[in-house]
Image (cartoon, rainbow, N blue to C red; front, side, top):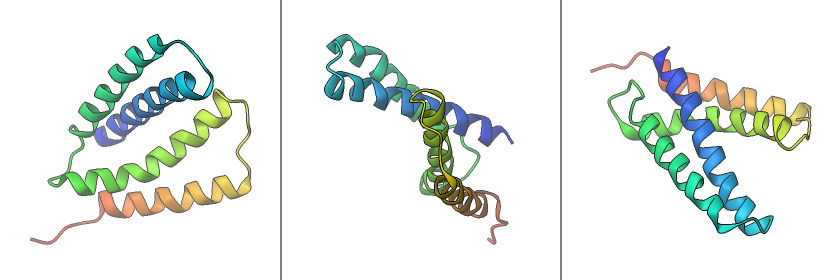
Length: 108
């Protein structure tokens, strides 16, 4: 369960960091937006190292589903666009895949 907390932290940090770059380039905000953006991306990378798995690739693969859900929540909470049924279906499929990757029993 601790991995889920770290995934949540990673997702918030990655989306926040990427949004800072988006704001600078696409919304013509101050380059000072890059400072918290870079800090957020460092937090993102550090959070992924805390995932309880032996292999980095598996942690990253499972994170994909969490990132999709977090992105849709960002879309709704920050950008004010409500995810539609296709967004919800896609996120559900991805989260199911992430759960299989992260929580399946592994043989030796």
